[in-house]
Image (cartoon, rainbow, N blue to C red):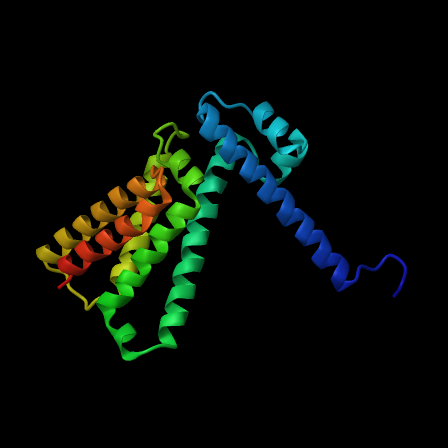
Length: 204
């Protein structure tokens, strides 16, 4: 290999290190925000918790606001990956999974399971102690996401359908808050099952 060239393996290792550094910083930021609250937390707290330099944090993310938004993106991306995996699995199974209502239920289960696995971050994101404008960003993104979920159902622009959409969003929001605040892991499955049961009734 010519002097000064970089192999594919070198590139992969460099990106792996970058990804590991970013995850470490975000893990630390989430813990700091959970312990101190977003407003009271400082970049120095994140530096101390992560072991990364302030320059490295600014290079990868920017300031405190950007860290918070990156945590939100991290959770949202995890939800999307889980839903995609659930739908791919469903496509390989029986005819029940061709039912659009069942597809919606798969979306709901994947989302709520992600909220449990990301409960520390979910608590931070729903704490109310957030950057200016974050609630609008979250509401708009969740609305867009939920519209995509509802797209698996037959098209319907009636007032009934609009009300149904709001009821489903409220059910999801309250269910995710209950799961994020759960102290007993044994309570998680019943909450998810109950949420899915109510959504099944609403979409009958």
